[in-house]
Image 1 (tube, rainbow, N blue to C red):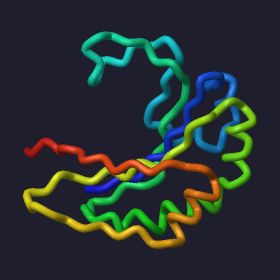
Image 2 (tube, helix red, strand yellow; image 1 turned 90 degrees about the horizontal axis):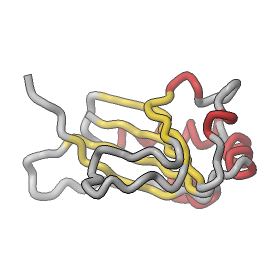
Image 3 (cartoon, helix red, strand yellow; image 1 turned 45 degrees about the vertical axis):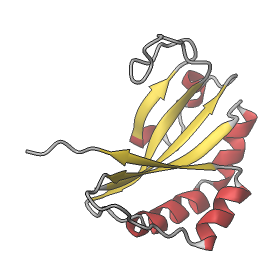
Length: 137
């Protein structure tokens, strides 16, 4: 299984003011707010310094990154103006997070085409690869 998520956050981003009418509103996976204490990977209970959201770009049953590239490129092209709006509203960190199910193989090479790298650079976005564990059964 593979996913592509768009993450936007900012130290001065008012996520609640952004959402009414936002084009990302329909596929929000998570919303987080400054001061909340995340429970995952946070044993010291450190509050969040920023606010933001996670938006589902795509999901597939295929474990290979190549199945996520076309939807990611389409997403980046479609929301070009919205990325500028987010920056004006206080977003200072945007990224695409490609989640892939962990495999038993020692190495699994994944290719990033130049078009994706150029698009991420154009919008000043970061890139993350996450390994997800899907429970069996």
